[in-house]
Structures are given as C-alpha cells and as structure tokens.
Image 1: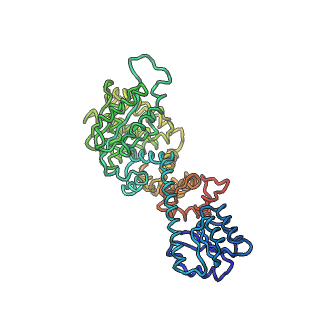
Image 2: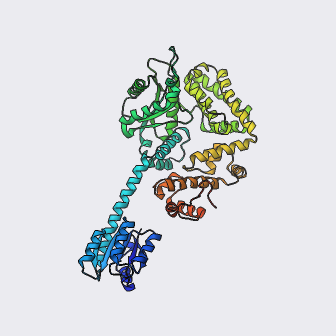
Image 3: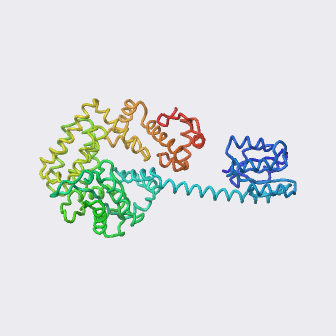
Length: 535
C-alpha cells in the first residue's frame, strides 16, 4: 500500500480531500497531514512517503519552496499540487519540480480520483521495474549461484522427500521443469598422465582445478538453460553436468567437452555419464552412475564410459541409516558384520553391483566426516585414484579397505567421548547446511535411526535449545544477512531461509528482535550480532 501525506494550511481542506477519494480502493493510505511546508519536511524526514498532495499558498514555508526542497531531497516522491490561485507562477513551479498534476480548488472528487489513479499506476510500474531489476541482479550474484548449486548437491545426494515442496524451491532457481524432464548426468575429472616425463608443478591436475571448472562452465554455455553444472565440495577434483535429454548426443557432448579442455589445458579429461533419468527421485541414482562410469573407464585413448543401471537398490535407505548410526555410535562389531554381509551378496550377483556397493559404502563412511573429522584426504583418494577400486577384486579386500577407513572414523569418535555428542554434532552440522529446506525433528531423528521423542530430549540436553529453537536461530541469522546485503523482498527471503511465508517470517522476526524486518533493513543496529538473536 502506498503512503500519502496531505499538506494544506486549512484543516477543512485536508478533511475534504480525505473524504473525496476511495483511498483503500486505490491501495493508498493517508498516513498524515501537515499545515505547511516546514511541518511536511519534518514528517518526510521521519517516515516513508510515496505521494504528497500539497497546497501552494501556505504560511511559514510556501508551496514553491516546499516543492523545490522535495525535489532536491526526495526525488522519488510523487507530487500533486492543489491551489486556488490561477497563477502561471505556481503552475511553472509545479512543472519545474516535476509535479505529477496541477489541480484547482475546489477539487472535484472524480478529478482527484483520476489523478491519484494515474500516480498509483506510475508507482506500480516503477516498483515492478525495481523488483525485476533486483531479481536480475540477485540471479547474477554469487549468492544465487551458490544456493542453486547447494540445491543441486542436495538433489543428487540426499533422499528426495516431499516432492511438491522440493518443486516449489526448484522453481525459485529456474529449475521448475527439470523434474518432468529426462536428464543425463556426466562426471568429468583430470587424471595424471602415465608413461610420460614428470609434469611441472603448475601443470598437474591438482593445480588446474579452477581453470578446468571454468572451462567446463563456459563450454556448456552453448546449451543455454538446458545444461546445469555443479561441484560436490567433498570431491573438488570433479565437475558434474546435468544435460536435458534431446539437446545433443551424450557421447558427442562428452567428446566435445574433452576436446575443449584438452586443447586449453593439455590434459585430456576422463568423462563418465549415465543413461536417461526421469524426475528428481532418480537424480541420486544418475549421479552415482556417472561417478561409477568415471571411475571404471580405463581406455586412455578414448576415456569415456556410460554407467549402466543396476536393477534395484544396492544399499537401501533404511540400511544406510542403520549403518550410519552404527558407525557414529561406535557399534563397531555390528557395523563390520553388516558391511561384510552386503559385500558378499553384491559380489555373488555381479562385478558392477559389487563396485557400486563399494562406492556407496565409501560415501556413507565419508559422510561421517563431520562427526569423525577424519579430513578430506581419504575422500579424494578413492575418487581421484580410481585404480584403487580395481584392486578391490574380492570381498576380503573390499572389506579390509572399508573397515580401515571406517576404523579411523571410529577412533576419532571414541576420542571425542560420548557417542551421543557426535550424533548431535553431526545433526547440528546438517541443520547448518540445510536450514533452507523443510526440516523437522522426525525427519532428523529418522536420519540417525533414533526414536523422535528420545532424540528431541537428547538434542535439547546437548545443545541447550530445542530443535525448533536452534533451527529458527540459524534461519534468522541468515535472514538478517540477506536483509542488509541484498534488495530481496520479504517473500524471497522467507523462501530462501526456510520460513513458510513472508507473514510468518515477519511476525517471528519482530518477536525475536523487537523490530520489523523492513525497519531493520532501513536502519540496522550498528552492533547487531546476527548469530545470536535476542529473545
């Protein structure tokens, strides 16, 4: 609603103007009155106003001086001049200061409504232009890019729960049609050259990660919005592509990408890709298949392979949660027995299923990194040195490799003390990285295979706050950052920080901080600590 200030030295004129217009019908609100230009300037200095309706012949500060000051200090104001003097001097002053219209007293109701309607429509156009510009700037910002890639990583690594809520969030990042599109996943990475003289340090694959990534992003520009690029932070040497079905032949896409990178960097990348996947629920499978294809491709002359689907899940979600809990809680014996049983079953079925299980178990152990803090060195080792997986050609070898890796995490957990501490530490890290999504206590407890009531009490005892209080604090800290660092509207900020709508976000913000989000944006406290909101 636009805010209007009426300025006239005659109270009955001001009252008459209030009665002659359907303010609410025009989405306008008269927020105050002033008896002269000086009073009006004082009000303008204290509160936001969109439209000023002013007389010209006033005491203390006349209309001409008032218009000139408004134009100089508040160039965005829409000025409507009303006077009983048919004097060219006043008309010229109004035009010079870009008044939107010039009306003579007594003002007819229909004339006033027509002028207000015209000014309101002009404000609507300007606001819409500003909003569109803000969206464009935001979408070009690094923050938008990072948030979009964060969503892509979640789609390929986490369980897809509420599809409708996920689709709404995907639409915010221009991914609205991707759930119904068939897609291919491709994974690309550089490998050390073999059989050649040692390379200079600046020409090793590790040193070329940034140009490798940038070249890939530039290359896919030819496919427009039909190709997405992202990196998984756990595996910095790899770049992943999601290409909509039908844009191009996948072997040709991979060959062209390899040729582009090889021509500029002098290293031929290895690329693996998967068959067509449909819907967000299959993205995790497509991501895994492209990773496996990358690791299993051995032909150096043409380093390209397609991942093939395995019927059924190699490692079910329920078993994944159980193994994660066993590892984090330090139930080492049960963890080892379960791993060996799954390896034996996969080995008896097929080599590809066996290899796929190794990688899934490896990702599970790597996922305990937040709790065990065993570092990223092990995470890089298997993916960036795929020859290791070819050596794991028996159940015993695979079991030994995985248990040694898990053993490091297990020892770290033992050194950390109470296993419950590690679980809650991992849970808070998960919340910190996923606060923008629809999180709930039941979902989090299920992730660690806990009873939700017990997990709720455990979380509060270890963190000192309930799950919902902790989640709200994290969301509010990010919301305050967006308020002061972006021009995003409250609806967008609520969406990006996990609140259900702008109204709930605003009421929660005011309750926690004692100030409305819009007022906070206009005048943020100098020493405000967004990490510790006031209760």
